[in-house]
Length: 294
Image (cartoon, rainbow, N blue to C red; front, side):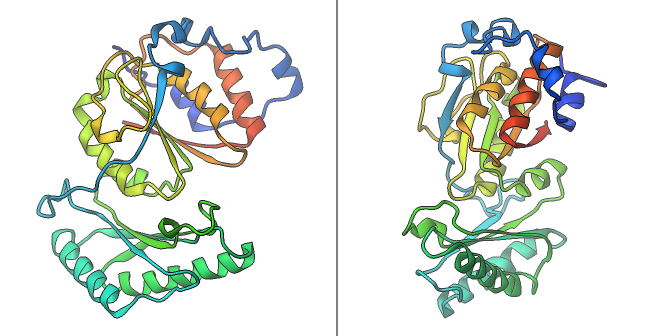
């Protein structure tokens, strides 16, 4: 397959999404179901919409390998609590010390969450207090490059998995750092055959950056099923990332963030009118799109 290079549709289109004027939108010769995208992508895919929704996989288990180090640490709180217990403090300090020995020059991202119980104002305050708790511990070992709060993420009440802090230790690699910094609502991950050489490296990154309530979709022509873990996927088939991209937008809520991870090695170039159709949908739903090209 041929990679997109230079001033490709990928660089032009995913780099910046411009709002369409009504006149531009009216001239798009598109199909309501986007059947013509990729010159008939739907016909080449055994999976519906060329994608499957999957679950995150387990964390890496080999702490001696920098490539597979468990770079994400999570601690959980009871309802309305923002301070760690003494046992949690000791465990976190031990983790930070051991990780610092392996990655002494690394930086960290710290994230704090709440569930949907309480008012929005209360949950924002609670998330910030949990963030302060985590930051005070992390900064003793690592410089902190980013902090995020996610109050009411997801909105269920009660939900123990959302009452937490996440600490992600970054490697020096551009790719892992880029994805670690994306607290995306939806991940769309290319699982075509050309992704095989890098597959295991970046699935680790996705497992580390996944936040409560996020959804993960893999773009595949065949070989995946809903609800399997991302680690159980074996990349194969052609690249239909553009069609999957168009379809996944229908599953997103206005204002959400979409992270697309792909090498974009498609044999079928995206047509200019197809690009405009996707661009229009992104603009209408106010979706934030972050693309990482491998």
